[in-house]
Image 1 (cartoon, rainbow, N blue to C red):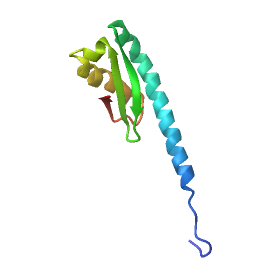
Image 2 (image 1 turned 90 degrees about the vertical axis):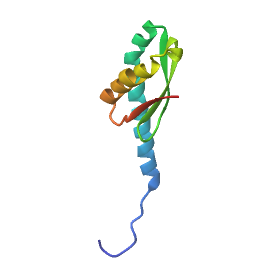
Image 3 (image 1 turned 45 degrees about the vertical axis):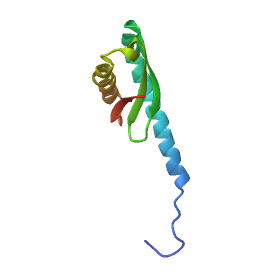
Length: 97
């Protein structure tokens, strides 16, 4: 590095990129949920996307028959989480909100 004026870093651009990646990931998650939604609806249930965190945790709310179903955690982990991890880079976990 040569001498002269110190290099400045514009952090606003860095945050903007993070926000864009988060929006993109949320859109991908929503699209993947659309694939599983018909199966849930066939059993009287549904799923709502609540949040996607910057560390890849997806929070969903099960609705309808899925909400009170004793098998809901299995649906959440073995169905929804598995699908999202396969389809969306960066998803680390799916939790119930």
